[in-house]
Image 1 (spheres, rainbow, N blue to C red):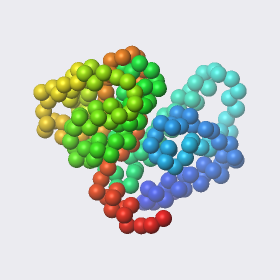
Image 2: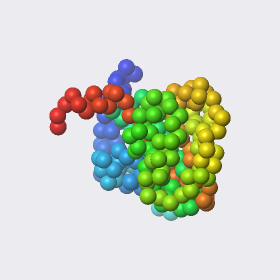
Image 3: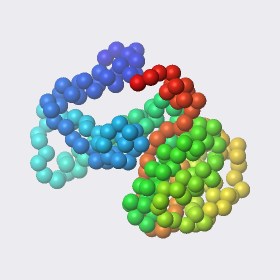
Image 4: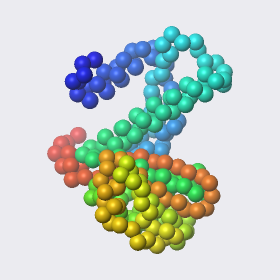
Length: 219
């Protein structure tokens, strides 16, 4: 493959190679089923072809099985993040982590509500540490939690900062928060302090270009 191939053509090339070599073997990737906004819009589940190039078939849960499962998980998660961060007009991957939840279902519901919130996505585009929009999205999710116990953090390659503690804004630096939110990948971490369950959802910011792209063509 030529090094100067455009990213889109490169993705198409590898996809065709996967389809050719897989010989019809596919794996339902339950890892991201119903957990990513783009999956809910485009498909109920993501089918990824998997093949073994000359290696013995794994027929039992042994060391090879665990190694393959771990490697496949990394590949799937990496691809899911790239797809989420490559939304129309997007400038940043937006990751939402819910920790300290009472149940997995509660954590999933809260994380999906935040990552799909248009106002929150717009705030991420504006590099605005608008914690009120995140709490609002958690509130209308339908999941029960106490907003007066929530701790919220923003994190990226530029650092990590706490924005609220027990539902109240802390004395944080707006300049530092803006710096953290200006990276290409941003994470919001909400601790609801109800248990040990966690969930992570991925999406992207909401930009002017998203409106322009979707207003400029008809389907």
